[in-house]
Length: 248
Image 1: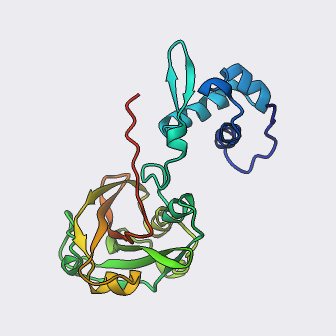
Image 2 (image 1 turned 45 degrees about the vertical axis):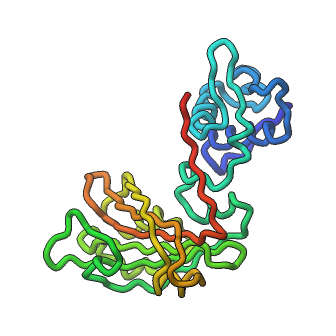
């Protein structure tokens, strides 16, 4: 089981987590539980402190549960669950987890003043507020799978925004932090029943009037100010979202 970690291209605890996951997927741990922190530390060649950080992450993701007297129990049921929206903030990573070749294409940004036609409402909207409209289409095996329509408030944009137009490979959180003067802290998501309208029909190649999965999101800065509003629509045949509810 010995597999020392040498490269440091990622945070060490992330690499430790990935190494543990490789061993779990290889069925290296009999009895459905991980060995002790001391054994993992020795076999991976890293400190127990880093191993502990990796185990905390695995616990948070529902891969293991620490049970007093038994140790860290492995949940293979979680390993087989794909497209967990509680695990991925980047839709490309979400689609890759579903087994697809994933890509993203972003349109040229444009200015919007009225969010009402998009079914969105800014709780902090001020007079003459404008929004930079950023549209992203995420593809799964070259088929349009997710339409992301986002509106970044002009009042939070950096002055050098014109130099930051073409960043298609960034996740939207990275894009938002690149564009905004205030770092994003959290996003509140509201799930809404919806049907395919003209825009969704064109972008996701779906028939008008069909039921569709959709959520609306409001992103807040570290100062708890609204910096972006968005509407995300998922192709019902390509995206099967799941959610882990962890009780222990």
